[in-house]
Length: 205
Image (cartoon, rainbow, N blue to C red; front, side, top):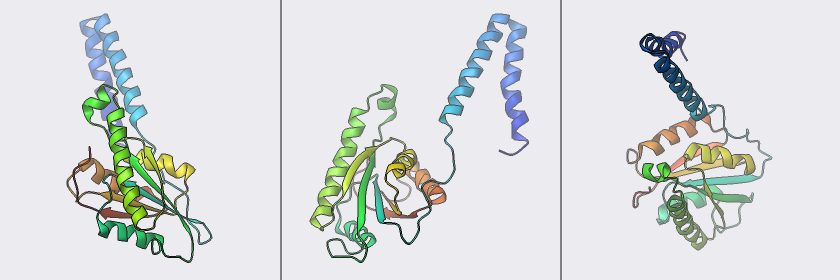
């Protein structure tokens, strides 16, 4: 945060509270409580922006994390994942563990109503389609549903699955602003190798 922003933030919090106290002590207390709640909510939502994952060395077992915001069906996309692994069903010089991760991305109303089941079902459908497509190419992979926040889902997963490479599968650039922002953040913060794979298909929620 730049130094000049802090006084403005403090003023934006303090001035309405002081003004409310001039009108009525009760109103001032209410304004102060509201400001306190807003500060707590903002603080909770702020995510640490350090590096994600561990540095990769040449001796590490290869682990590929494929994050699917779109299901992978088209042969070209499957071939790209196979190329990342080292030939799909063919024997490669170094074995690779493959994990598919689908964030459970729900709509605003679903989150407001705490209805996450629909989002999880949609994520599971993406995983089933992708696992089947990769299996046809001779690629075995585990699959998991992750947090609705794509970056948080990756950050959570690499703690138990120390990926040496991360592939993010998305739709065309511009179709989903949230995914675009997540892709940019992952590119900046991930320590393992990162690449983005663009596929076509029905829009995900």
